[in-house]
Image: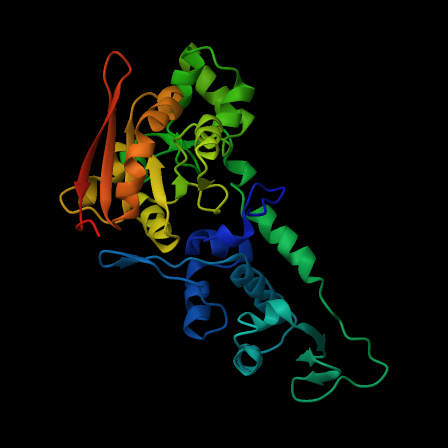
Length: 212
Length: 125
């Protein structure tokens, strides 16, 4: 049985779009495309429908992206990050930044394999390696993978979603569906159980529309 | 079988029905794909060897003549989705297992009886 996390996600079923992945990592979609070209962070799969292909990022892709972002902010060069990723990527470590222990000292990144630190030189004795808690990054990524709370109560139309009919922003739930449930006497709580990407504010907006 | 549940489906009742029938299922929310386009959802489902279940008539429109992937379109009111699946799914599963490209439209008459219409994109294995 698959493990469902508290965020309602199934870790090994996560296939985030480029738009979502960019939001979770905190960069633009163009930047993420550039990182894929440099092979810093690549989508785990690119399934096709007809001639169209879709980048899909796994949770570990996203964790790797968050670490790349962190390293760049610590002034480690993209070139050096690329070197580390290429040198340590393997079948056992498809996402070396997300699965190996590593550290930053000065503008240099280090990776630990066994008892040795790699990355050009070993950290100087007496300098504590500045390690990162990967589990914390994973938890934060899971939180950011959810529909952003600031979209609650907003209605939008989006090409390719429900034939461009009004939906709650950031979802594929038609406003009309919730209105039908309300007309049928469903409570807001039961509507959210039926359509778990909705927030209370969405149901409130549908109620207000019906009342007006 | 594996089913990927669209966001316009009543998750609570369909989840219960599919689990009762012994199937595996997950939703766009669980895949971190809420709000993404029909075409990308279809690509995801194909990549994960899953059958899409949706109420969205437009989902299958671009490829209606030559289906790509496996999609069940429930043309009934949301609250009746579980009952519709329970009526037709046991008969459909052997077909779904033998092809990679089929669109199924489940229609309900005024007495609540459901009927499934199948359009194949590739032949049965």
